[in-house]
Image (cartoon, rainbow over all chains, first blue to last red; front, side, top):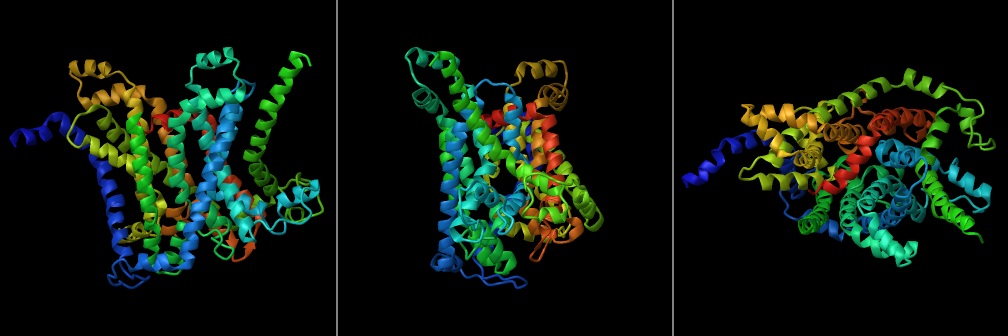
Length: 294
Length: 284
């Protein structure tokens, strides 16, 4: 027992505790406590300005029976799976392109990162303007080139609204994929390619058999990160469509915001937010499993 | 065909054309943002004009913005919040990162795991209860609510970035200094920190950028016009009801985007190397 206590009181251990304590304190007060609070609120029928009563898991049951919420779940899955796969495919292509030698490569790499680095809420406003029902520059260009004969109702139609938020999310997240994959490609020794070239491998088989297996760990990490970020994404949908038209692009976070802070049903809103938790948990478990193996 | 011709064709179709397409996709929104902010209203809403170019460039939208709105307050708030939170997170991140990289103590593994997990916790999971915590501290409607809460997602990021950097510094350097009678903290400040400047610059910059761009907390905690930050003020204050003043909106978006873009173009080398290193080492 004594020896056990002494391990905590070694000078090195004491320095360690002193160094981590401020960070630990902040995380306890502003992450762990709010999380417990979130669970408590989600188990109550709290509305804005009233204390609310404990109602058990009725918020969750009510939500699962609510067609509006079911559609939100479906939308969130469509939004996440389609954007993550688009970002991965395009990110692989862009990563391979950026890994080649060409003049101005440095500048191009920097420019490619811009969508990821600029405040999303501001760049999405530009997209909102580009999707404007009357003044859309895309319709102007596509009509002008004769690709379409009728204006596309970008944000006014359930199908096109989903397409629009998917395009914008892909635009914003692609740089993260491309640069991470580029970093992975740069660590692959040239000799491996040379060996493949002697065997006469073409570009695509070379990529398939040499690069892809070596990129697998990075791809896994990037996809898992992006999955949780996209499930929890807020700004793009909030600014572009506000979940509309007729709930066609409503996702977890925007519905939680609407229910809790606009409609004032805080208990129910907290419950919606907490539906992100199992997804987060799965991502964490997969990620930790993956990193431990590496 | 001659081999040289084939090589050129391969270069065009295998590199330049697809790259040009990607660049167009990435940059067109910024082109459009810039074009729209230097047009006068009649030109902006003229469907017959050549809309891809400016006939008469004007600063009208910017003038209106500075005269009619609280944009100077918003910019100041954004700078203050981003600077303070980057500084706090960097300091606490250096401390925690050093402890995890170098010191052995019971619970170190658990703490490391906890920071990694909090790094993944999205802001939209906790914004509802956090609003209550912020209220309990009477910080709602002030930029202090942001200065206090942003470090929760910045510290884990800084800690993990810096662990990787600290680990890459040979231990022997500090041990020498400590044998010479230097304490651990002094060894950290005088030996380890100067050697991890790239990692520290990157973490600080990236924290600044993340704070500058943050939206959900700022939208939830702050409703008074003068306390808002750029990222929230522009979409909430400049859209009045159903009226969109696109010229002003684009001009303000440009102003809000330029500091981050400039900031990072100065330090791009740090940034790209840090990002790629971080993406890989992050899990360490």
